[in-house]
Image 1 (cartoon, rainbow, N blue to C red):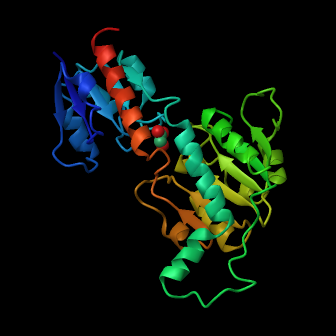
Image 2 (cartoon, helix red, strand yellow):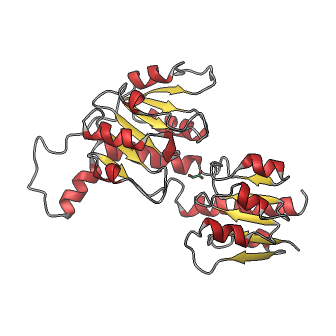
Image 3 (cartoon, rainbow, N blue to C red):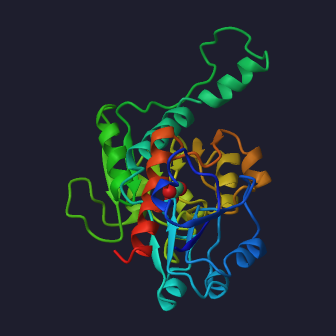
Length: 304
Ligand code: GLV
């Protein structure tokens, strides 16, 4: 019987695969501090964690019995995978289980930011709707626009399928030539040619601040930037500045570089739709990814 630390409350039934083990949880469902995490892993064989838990070399070193980490997320940027490999710890994530759900949210942000739905709703609720106006809440068309996908993994492809229904021209860029229709060799070229840009690369050393002031300057004044990947892929100060100066039209953002902190500049920026990292947040998908992580941890502990 092994001991598994589960850092957050999981959807009903998701702990079932760990029934043969001692499952240790915290009473409350709030994120715990890094020192608390370091302290809690001293005698565990497995960890089931979420993307806001930083499982770095210090946590791994503090867990001499650790054999497996199950991250209830597809991104692995919160885990020091090199340190895990060095310590012989297996790392499990949830590829393929949240693609369609996250693509839905990316598309929701494409529509909401392009059509200024958030501004308009805010005004209505605040009692500031003066009546129908020919020149009010003018957005940009999504139908027929050119969509530039940065990265072309499963989530980007799922967004591309949705774009077909809106008669969009879909371009994509990735580090490796996909050889597929719509591939654009240079990121700069993709940014220049796109009306709407949606980010779908993992956060790595080579994608940190991939979209900075220089890249934003390549976008058109009527363009929209959507980020459902990881906050640090975008230089948030440069994005806030681009929105402030009208260098781009709007942004739809679900992820931030220092979650749950959102920079004051971004909160102030006009035409920014800001969501609290809910890309995978449907009942079915959260249940699926939690089960995928706990089953993976159980299989690793069983030596499978
Ligand atoms: C969500 O952001 C994930 O990486 O699963």
